[in-house]
Length: 66
Image 1 (cartoon, rainbow, N blue to C red):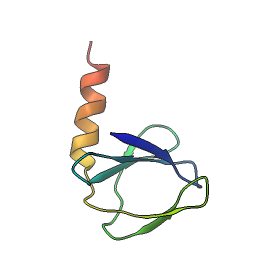
Image 2: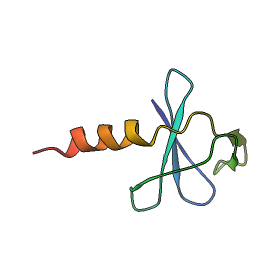
Image 3: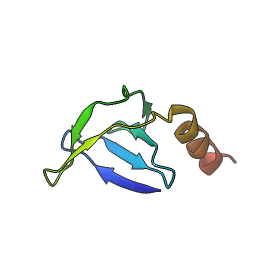
Image 4: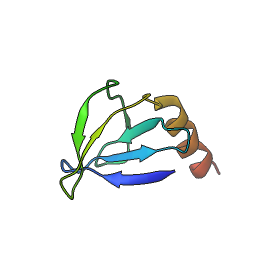
């Protein structure tokens, strides 16, 4: 998984299978519509593909499980 910071401060996660997920500035998993164009912190444009909300939530849950 590659994490990319966006211009608005959110983080977009890009998985090896080409799908993506997002989290807000506070680290909460957020929904983003498929096909929405986003701008990275360095000015590049990325189009959202395959919103993986449950996938990111489960990864964060596993990482923080006691």
